[in-house]
Length: 249
Image (cartoon, rainbow, N blue to C red; front, side):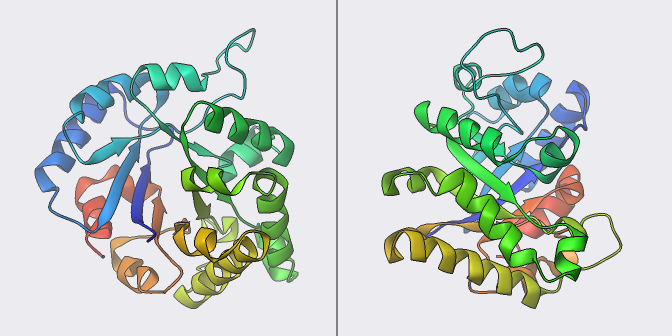
């Protein structure tokens, strides 16, 4: 049975003091929930966050990683480095990494393989831009992003994959994705996985929605049968907002 997951991507926000404060606020509000909770602080605060949440049911995850184990890659972080501080889940393929740092499907395929070789879980992101949606090419874009980076994997590897659909056109553009549009794409994604693999894989893969989920729309979005949670950006930087989204389940 697939899990409900709410993951907060803090992006390049919060210094050490702010990280400690937000974690303290989250811990004070955590209640029993049917959703698995994750937060992704910046690299410099992962170790501290891991220590603070060691006994918590909130998992600390990384925002990115390199595909190499080590070497002359200035400024990069490897899977083994993350594992060494207790981080075993990583976000890969986020739209901002694709857009600003030119990460393509081939690079992400290498990153996926490196994460799996190190027994890490992956939150794999993908999604179309506004021009793709308006031209009706959104299904093709999403299909290619998934196929090119993930469809070489053996069935067993999918136990370590969480999918996260990000309609880039609905993030900071003024455009809004409806719950029906989210369900339509999530249903398409699950069917795509089913066609390549089988019912066991497709029905057990969690597919998160990353299109500006907020407390006001979380319950409606999460009520869709193929939406298993959210990858949260701005709303994850406020403990009350994030927990309201978690509790939308």
